[in-house]
Length: 75
Length: 89
Image 1 (cartoon, rainbow over the protein chains, first blue to last red):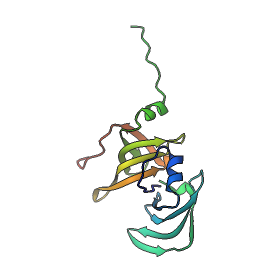
Image 2: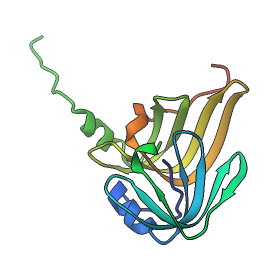
Image 3: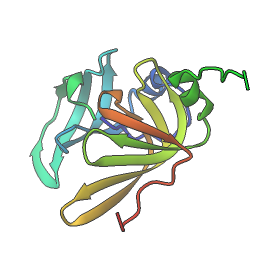
C-alpha cells in the first residue's frame, strides 16, 4: 500500500507515527484507492481510517465513520 | 591474486542507498523510483519524490507522489541509483 504525506521522516515506523491524523491515500494491490484520515494502524499494516472514499478510477462508494483495511492487501 | 572480496549483506546495500535515488521493481507490473528515506527489517520502504510507473496494455503510465510507504510484501528488485523504465521497453 502507499500513503502520501508531506514531511520528511526516516524509517517506516517513524513515517507511520507522523502520518497518523493526516489525510492519506491507501492503495491496495488490486489498484483500489482509499482516501481518508488515518486514525491508527498496527505493526501488520492493518489500518483504521475515518471519512473514507473508495476510488477505482472513478469514485464508487462513499464511507463515513470508520473503515478497517487488513494489512495483507497492501502494495 | 589471493584477495578475497568482503561479503556485502543485502540490507547493507540498501542502507548505503539511503538519501539517494533508487528504482524498485514489484512482483506485479509496477515500478517506483524515488529517494530512499528509510526502510525496515521487512524491507518496507519510505520513498520521497516518487514516480510510480505502471505497465498496461495502453503503455506506461506515470504518476507522481510526494512521500510514500511502500509495502515490502510485493517488492521484488531494488536498483540503487536507477533511473527507472523508459517507454521504448
